[in-house]
Image (cartoon, one colour):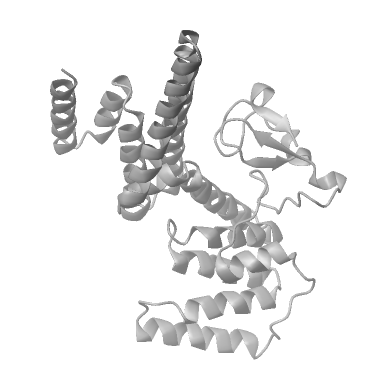
Length: 295
């Protein structure tokens, strides 16, 4: 019966994990249409790769795969109603109820599990977005695009539960300093100074650097940033950011330069002016010719 098959599947997956073949276990779950188990394992692998191996690019790829598995599960669950709909109104109602029950079970599983890998169930694309914007910020930093990098780094403040807060606010402070946004830089230093679990030596070093910077530069910005940036920096409230540039997308501005497209796969946005030279979504890499809607 189903219980025997489930037991054999769990046993085989356990053997693969013990041998260190976690991707083999993922493939086993995928072939058995156990998308949620595959997604959980991929998300856990992404977290492990990011923390232990410091490989954010691979972590992003694994997070994208995890999100795609969650999407596959939800798509299959929602299609159940149409498959059984031929039996009349009662069958449709039963199928719809079963679909909703299945999706609620998915959400409950995400809430009940205390592991980091359960985050992929709450918001399938959150992990992929965190690593994506981090990698984008680093590319902008190394090519000297300080203003772009600073804005993308600010977007990372939403992802303290995925990325290291020390890394996030150190990057914001670094890019803001070189971009001469000393007000933003000061806010980032406050975050670093008040961070929990810092050693006294580390805290003293941060304070000494802050004194050295702000005795020579008043903590002011050359131009005010939009409130979405500052709110995100202050309390981690996210905002819609272009997946190609990291810049804020002002949905209610009505300005031509803020026209955007939304990816049908990951549902993240990209500014129209940035999409012209692209063939794939910057975040999930879905083909743009059939995968974007204007917004």
